Image (cartoon, rainbow, N blue to C red; front, side, top):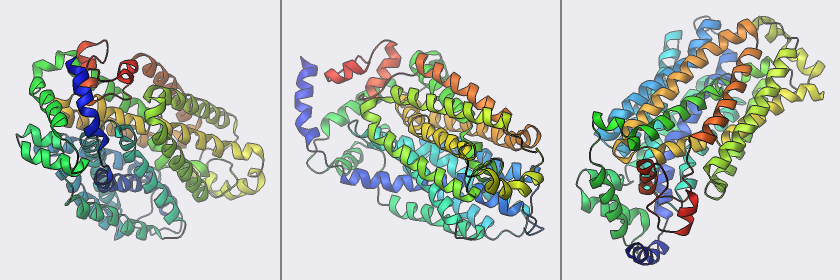
Length: 494
């Protein structure tokens, strides 16, 4: 009866929520993800120019240098994830997001004014650090300032803006020299810092520090002046008081290790699908395939498809559920990667990269307008579409939802670090594998990983649609159901 009374008391206050300032805070934060998406694929249009015979001799790259330029971003992101693991709980989510602008700005300055190869590599590494910091901090910040009615949609915003940043890079690369691409990359991070100055800190973070009045003020700012903050503050304080501080002995309890393992494995599998090397080397991959357009136009088309599919995922996230979208995502990725594997296996492409590049434009004219010539582009578009509908945004969202509240800052940093270390190894190896075996071997590995993703989703990943963060944590505590139910829909979601 008390729970029913609480629900009746809560409904009028929640109906008066104003989301306008919440949306503004999310927009300010996800500018960091826009910069992350932009910097991640920076190498895609730049590498072909730096590997061409016309490149500056001081900056010209061979296979090994190109492998490092493509992969060192992921290594920097792993370092950034470790940094965020400490900073999230040391200075808070908001300041961690703002601090990511420092390595980002310095990195782009180095690349924009590069006169030697080391400047390009160091600059790319620094932008990777910024990307790792934002990837670990922004989803957590958004989940903690959002209420559950919009948390699914807002949880997709980091992925949407990252995709939009990548599309902006692809579009600009059609008309802007590569040095000016680096200059343009400085702007989103600087705008983010300016806006974040005026945004509130996470109410949950403030309550953990005992700053109840500031937490109430932040909630009023986020929910509107007519919102009754008492119920939400009470729930957050109850969660904080009952969980305490995580100790090493707590790591053996299911409420801690189960969600951490699920999050870490999800981020590992997400990278093992091959999404990072495909995005980083997109133009290079298309130069190895017989498609109808020049690689730079193919990359722009794929970027647009990726943005469209993430927008679809955001619109249905809280309707279809996380697991259903993950199943759909995995099947699309499996079918497209299997198709690409068969194409690469049967294609008669010379393995040396310089020969391939010399035949690139002849392949466009000879084979490009046939159905077989369009198949690699279509399959890649389907792969990106599938990834961006499920394993892209939902992995970020679930990481912020299922990680234990007491250890969310540290655990999110751990997840991002594992993710980017995996991406670094895979991205560095990708160039050498393609140079030696062609695209067949990498695509075959990605196909096998898609099968593992399907099994992992079926067995290990819970459905969190419509559940509060406290209900999700209680699921891992009991191992059976979301027992803190306040509505019929929540009961069904278990």
